[in-house]
Amino acid sequence: MSTPSKRRPLFCGNWKLHGNIADSVELATQVRNGVATLRDTDVVVAPSFLAIESVARRLENGPVAVSAQDCYWEDKGAFTGEVSATQLRDAGCRYVIVGHSERRQLFGETDATVNLKARAALRAGLLPIICVGETLAERDAGETLARIGTQLDAAIRDISDDDLARSLIAYEPVWAIGTGRNATPAQAQEVHRFVRTRLGARSAAVAAATRILYGGSVKPDNIVALMAEEDVDGGLVGGASLVVDSFIKIAQAGQTAKGQPAKGSV
Ligand code: PGA
Image (spheres, rainbow, N blue to C red):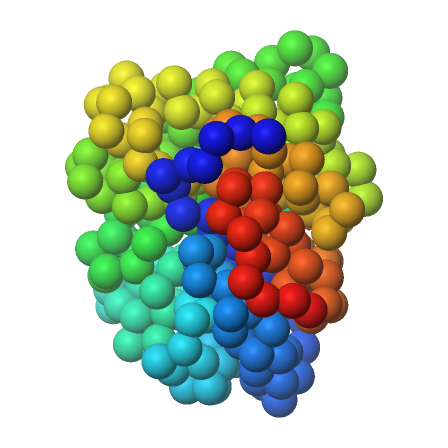
């Protein structure tokens, strides 16, 4: 097990396109109640756009923060169908996921637009959760670290060191998302270490502060081993975050793994 990290663990439940407003508020309420006694871990939920405001109202002044799953990079204008980072902030968000592989693969997101979105988030006072990850073909071709390096460099361009230290990076191997096949702890650590070293090219302080989450089939039974790795600071959780007991167990197990005993129980 690693020594206790100065970086505060963070777990974000990415609810993707699931749940109506009432379902989302109910799930958020259960998460809030379940993590009420977790003191040393940040817990975040990311409902669909339509449920954000209702969920944020329900979670107001509590320990669970709200994230959006995407944002646009302009604050206003003729951009039919888009939602700006400032609107998300207004609706109660504190975080926003940018560059999720589903956005990259299904909706044409590029390294350049991920950067625009991350910068817009920071301008609006949101903390971006910047996703990077390789496909199975890239991993099999031995291109994992090169791909991650390219994505990371592009995503953090023109972001100040202070802003970068507050931002989060999520390593999500595309082949592990929704497949039930997670990266091994050693595979995750290799990439997380690579990301942290790359951040260190900016400054040692950024490398030490920036939290790097793992995502891709995180479950209660694999999170402890993942969190035991030195550079894994939390999780971006899809399917398992829709089951309240699973998500709470993940947050508790993660906290325990970092040497910060969970004070709550499911
Ligand atoms: P998963 O999704 O946990 O269902 O694999 C993770 C994600 O897409 O963020």
